[in-house]
Image (cartoon, rainbow, N blue to C red; front, side, top):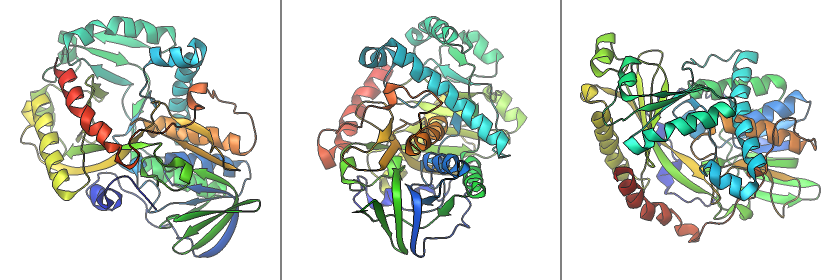
Length: 440
């Protein structure tokens, strides 16, 4: 396996103090086995695909390098919300046409609905909360754009309220340096680890075979299929799905080399805050929120009173680099929520989100590889879109036309980044410019 980041990023260390628990009682692949569809990756994409394939009677085996949900699916901020592409709507409309850009927005809405349906159908207790999410303007000019944004959302069937600065305090949304908000009334917060575990159990109950601690180290073409090599054995499959997202290997398959850009995202969670502590800061709402910075912060008050705060950033995956990020995230947290500066941090972890060069996700066949599909690149918003992409690619694997929207936005194959193995330097170079833009 050839990966982009330092080995530390793929070890257990970055998620050792994660707030979300995972279920570890899953068997590893032992010996040689056969299946119809092999899925590499036990995150939301792979588990959703396995569930939807198994429900239709397809024999499917998931090979996960660690435990289901170990990667980004079990260490994100728990925002089931709109998103999945980094490209703005105007760019998508220019590239794909207005109708396809609108179809992409409809897919985002359907993705949220799919997660809600899966939670209900399979009785997954994921501690959901929040009536949508709030975007907080870090500059007055951003707030001035919220009226047009609200109208755009309303025209597409999503309720939205513009919140003037004084309304934020009234709604229990007080944070330093904020100039207004936009309440987007779709989506909800959840426990991402509980959701991943629930998806895995549902897939198993439907007939999927899920194997943990079974990293795929090689994919060998065979007549009529593929043979996947793991430390404990091999799996022969007629069809293959790559669902590894930010934890992909550059050579599995070779076509993937240079086509993803995994970036770090870090999270802290406080101890439970008392009612008096929440009131002192002026943040009492359970709405999910994020600010409008390019290098954004995202945060939410969870049902048990703990407060989650996350941010993008990090150039290296080493213990020393993690210590620097720990100082930075605490400083940013204290700047936005000064009343909580001394509050104990109970959990802290990091993980890899995944960007594509086109700033859009890809769900479709692997070019120049027979009977193989790929689904990944959700740009830090994968709770809903990864689940949706798994269901979508399950239809493609079965040779059926998807019943859900499948916009051309999601069909453009991943392009190569410049600089090859050194492409992380692109983010390193861009970060100071993004930092400056956030402050101008």
